Length: 157
Image (cartoon, rainbow, N blue to C red; front, top):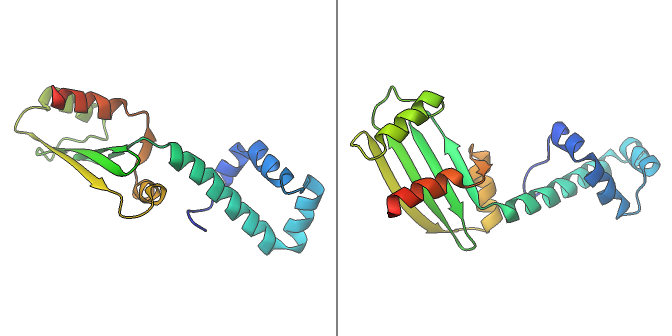
């Protein structure tokens, strides 16, 4: 497996897509039920292949990621050959970016000595989708890029 298997909840949400996936292999519901009972290892392989297909689609379309922790915000712009980052760090330990008040504090203090801003960019050391998947497994989430674009716009102006 290239990525990781989808969760039960994710499979349930993608039930129709999974049915279509099985249908492309000429597997109907009765046959799928039979495979699960008589050949569970084949069923497991099908689940893994489907999971990888879903991950490939999601990761191929990923452009922005965000990762929030108590004192840091990591914003990523995932381009074709490189990833750009903006890292915001609060130098005030009581500030918590996981709370609404922490984000308000950031808005009020973005260009003060209480906030460090680091910009970076790096070419992918491995396949793009795997690099993005690694960030997701470390806690990053897909985003619409609004915060990245907003902060980047302020920094560039």
